[in-house]
Image 1: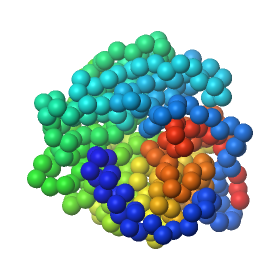
Image 2: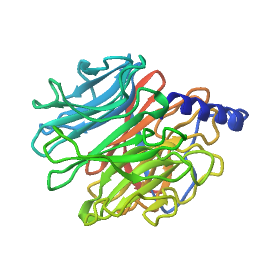
Image 3: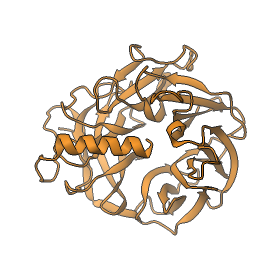
Length: 368
């Protein structure tokens, strides 16, 4: 999400929600559904002053957390399953402007790819999706490739990379992209593929585009048992505010059916029971080994500033219910650019940029 778009959303939130109550957010009351119980004893500060954090488990069992800090992208390592975190390690900085939107992918061969959004401010360098690599479990990093370049103008940029690796080794990298729409304010979700562990990338493919609107912030998930590939996106087509949506392809077609438009059956709203007035931006999706899909996004319900909310869905990334709030964030502050990490078979870690830094907390699925 580019800065001008973000500021516009905040202005709308201020007008719509400025008079809401100032108590802490609570869970939405539901019964007989799966939800998440958050364990406050596991709350930990990963990086003071950091933002836009994501976690993976490295091949050796360590947990890595990447994040933005002071215009650069970094990682920290945990040797004790997320209870404590080691020193900050620099992964990349931009030639001009900032390095943003970090995301990691553990490859099947043991290497780790690190994707980030290069956001120049000199009018000379292009907005880009860059790729760094570590071949030693995340201890050292080097630049590998440029997956995509957009314009030098922020109004025609590319944003927010997210990637998966298929069982055949193909890497699919998705990102929000304004570059094809220089004369409008539209945005699509673009896919590029790599068959050589991220060294080279295919020509871009449009996988999701709602005409006249701004599909954004894609997070892909390869569903278990061959049930397909889904992308959680933010979609401002159904309402003036962004809401979380799911875009789908089956494994056989593998995005070869053309772009998913606003009327496609391969696009659906993520939440069964949406709240009437809600900004539901910056979604994130993961799947537990037990089959449940977990969706988070930024919710503005009852608040001037949004916070992280989390839902539990089924094995097809549908029927998301059981809304919970992992972090207590004062209503005059926000919880931003959140993510989900599947720590083990029964444990979900929520990660949020709130209360002055990157925080994480563990939870478990229960039936309420």
